[in-house]
Length: 235
Image 1: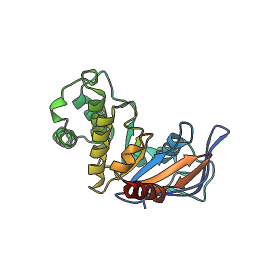
Image 2 (image 1 turned 90 degrees about the vertical axis):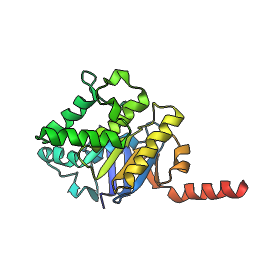
Image 3 (image 1 turned 60 degrees about the horizontal axis):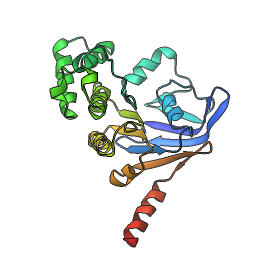
C-alpha cells in the first residue's frame, strides 16, 4: 500500500480541518478527492509530501515512511518518489521547457547530460509536447503548460502522482484531455491522487472517490457507481 492513513487528524494552525480520517491508496489506483472549497482537500495532499504536519494519527504511512515522525532531512527523498502537479502549473518562467525539466533533474541527482536529455524527451513525448521543448512558458496555452507540468512530475518515475485541482483553470475539453493523460499514466502502475471540483470527469474516467465534508472524509465510490446505474436505468 502506497498510502495508509488510519484515524488521522489534520489542523491548519489551531483549526481542525479533517478528523479521524481513513485514507488508502494502492499501487496503480486512481483516486479522486472531492468536496467544497475549504473542506480539507488541499490540506490532506500537503500532509502526503510533508508540507503540512499531521497532529495525531493511529497510522500515517506514505511510501513506507511514517510522515508523523519523518526527519526533515529525509523529506526530499520521499518527494523524489512522488510527482506533484498544481493548478497554477508552477513552471519557471525565466527559462524554456527543456531548462525547466533540466532544473528538476539536476536538483535530483541526474549528473549525466545525455541521460537527462533522453529522459526529458521521453516524458515530453509521453504528453505530446516534444515539439514545445524550446518554448517559453508564456508561449504556451494553459492546457499545454499543464501537460508540461505533468511531464515534469514524471521525470523521476514516481510511484504516485499528487495532483491538486490540475484541471481547475482549464476549459472542459482541455480538462478531459489532461485527465485522459493521467489515466494513461495510471495504466503503467503509477497511482494518481487528484482533487477536483469537476464532477462530470468522474463519470468519464472512473476511479475511487473520497469526499471531504464537515471535517470528515468518506469513501463514496459506491454512491457514484449507484448514481451511474440509476441514470442508465432512467435513460
